[in-house]
Image 1 (cartoon, helix red, strand yellow):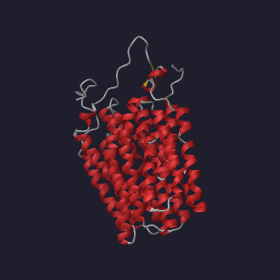
Image 2 (image 1 turned 60 degrees about the horizontal axis):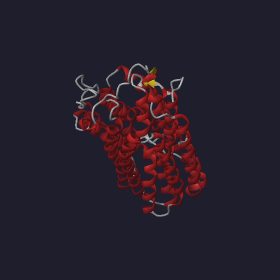
Image 3 (image 1 turned 30 degrees about the vertical axis):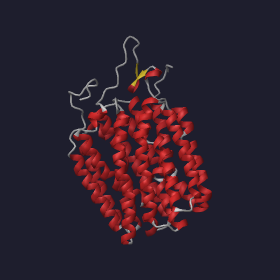
Image 4 (image 1 turned 30 degrees about the horizontal axis):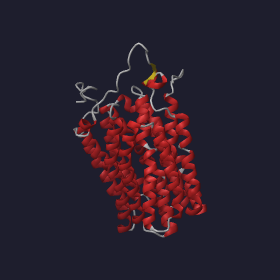
Length: 413
């Protein structure tokens, strides 16, 4: 069905809202649930962090499965299914009374989160935009941070006052409503059937639209670029997510519960601003050095957080951390799309995300264990900072993100 108006920016808006919901109640929300489970159930931080690790591991595996589904089915059905599954799991979280139950609920929640997360949403955006991809992805992925500003503090406020048992059903309902209607109301899977090419060019009926160009999946995942960027992201994202998931607990230990809620909001707000700026800056400079520099700055922010004791120093460190958080996560799909094209993007990115989520899953567990072992967060955040710096060095070794001229859509080599 053709459309008189280019729908690309409406699609970006839909992806933004979906990621706002899934991030606010998933990615950032996990830190709130960790704090609530620790306070209400009396469980060790390391035990809850292990469940968080399980969450990210399951989401990585399901992300690969989601990429295969996207190649065969309407992406809207996949994302909507994820919204329902995630909402049901989140509503059930308040009924958890044993630690083994938490692993079951987090496994189901991770499945829903992955089906309505970055793999399907970034796939849709890369289909609709080529030349303006960095800007479109920066806007859509800003939903990740917007969730931390708009939804996560409200979720913490609700759980602080109503507790897990009464509060989580409302959070589950918000999860469903923030994803399912939006997916069907705003997102169109591909520009072709609407009469448009990517970036808003009309399809000329006299010519056949070219097939999506890019490197074949099997060639991409064995390339030096993929291997080094992926290893670097294992370390950079592991330290980043570990730092985020422990942030509420760290700030609450050193200040107050209300200050801890504000900390998440400041982190996310800084991330929004930095991502919008970064989406424009990266269009005019090499992506690999930019990514590595951000991972190095992230090291500084994490080490600073580890030793920060006063509110001004804590928030100064959070602002610096937030400036790296938004851009590092946004740059991963950009690097994959820039280097390998659109042809096998869902499969390539989902595989990169799977490996990256090894670090993402390990970060919270490592920082939680170091917290319990050392009696504080100083050691945890120093180790996270060192991991981030190591990731920066490895990313620099990947080479250019620009695809070699000899690579063609047909050969994929």
